Structure formats: C-alpha cells, structure tokens
Image (tube, rainbow, N blue to C red; front, side, top):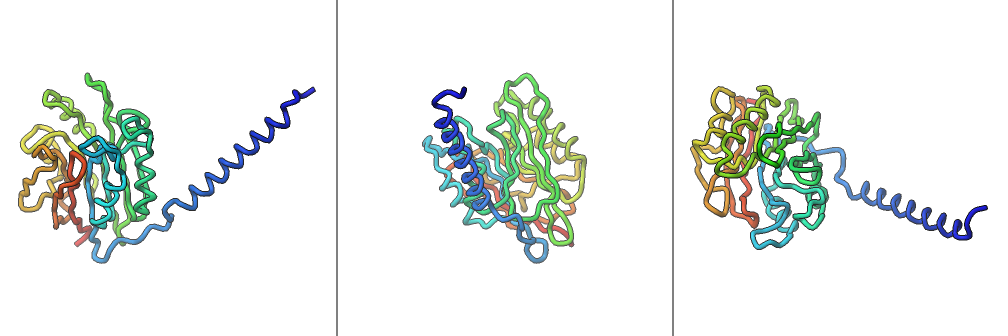
Length: 270
C-alpha cells in the first residue's frame, strides 16, 4: 500500500511541475522575437565590443542595468561581450547574458570559457544563419579561454563576427600568442569577418601583430586611433576586420566597467 503521505507528495510534485511549466511559458513570452530585423540600408552594421566584467563595476557593485544603458545608447546591431556570466559567482549567480538579452531585446549566442558559467557572448538583432563556439587548447595557465562566432545575414550578404578573450598577465605573452594562432586556425581566413574582444595586449605585442601579419585582418581603429580602452589607460580591447569591409566611426567611450566599450560602424559590400 502507498504511504499515507503519498497524495500530499503527488500534489506537491504536481504543483512544482505546474510552476515549471508556467516559468517556461513566461520565459518564452519574455524572450526576444525570433524574427530579427534586417540590416540597415547600405549594409551599415553598428558593432560594439565590450568586456563587461560580469556587470560588476569598478566599485564592486553588480549593476547590469548600467551595462544595458551603456549599450542601449549606442544602438548597436551587434554586441561582442567578454566576461559575460551565466550564473557565475562573480555576479552573485545572476544570468547576466540572458538578462541583457531580454533587457535589450536581442538574441543571445554564448560560449563558455573559464567554465560552464563564464565566457563570451554575442548579442544581435540581425538574423543568425549559423553560429558556433570553441575553446583554446589548455596551456600552462589554469583558465581555459574560448570564443563564440556567428554568421549574420546583412541584406543579400553576410557578416561573420567573433568574440574572444585572451589570457591576462604580463608574463603570459606566449600563451596569448598560442591562443591567437588557435583562433586564426578556427576562423580559417573567411571573408567579411570581424573579430573583437579583450586581447589583454597592447599595440606592438606579439599577439596583436600575429592577428594582422599576413592574415587579411586589420585594426578597425580608423586613422590609427590610439585611445585607451581601460580605466588604467591601457589599450587591450580590439576590433579587427577583413580587407573586404569598410570601417568608420571608431569610438571608445568611458563606462562603468574597468574596460570601455569599443564601437565602430562596419559596411558590408561595395
């Protein structure tokens, strides 16, 4: 015979299942629409790369709304994020990636790096044709790095975008160079490509030279803009693009994170 508490347990289980079902329904209704907008006229795509430090500001406060406002004012079509957590301890287990996706009404593509709760992301309002993730081979350093990429529809053409974050540390130049080589192999030299992220390396570093020497990639910093991208006055956040793309409106603007968002307009096509 069933225990006397079996009906009570059944009711509890049924209530929990109903709550999960309602939660799933709310999630579906709150998610961004699947029919993403088409690219702006002339193939002009506004793109931002930003290390958001898991939405924790320089004072140690969790403030995803400040990150959202910073991104919202720039009206980007594509946002490449680094240090975007999916419930990491740094953000108090807040799913920053999903929160920003809903807040900005953009589709989220996310790839793990250090672990299954911390990594890189792409937010976009453009149609996504393909996407993928990858991790760098583990080296001597304890943290595994990774990347996420997407092929986006831009009018009758397409644009490939990559978001990554390389190893930190002044003595980790060899690791960064190895990670760049892995990233370039994964990319394979395809056309109409933008690679952005926190490279933890400044102008003249081996990793930055490796990104542009004989690869068909160049910095999007039009006119040789050398503006610092961190609150410490360093320039470690980069956007690179293939020679078949045109860049304009390159801008670095101070923000609450230790890193600043780097924005540029990409023209796809002639």
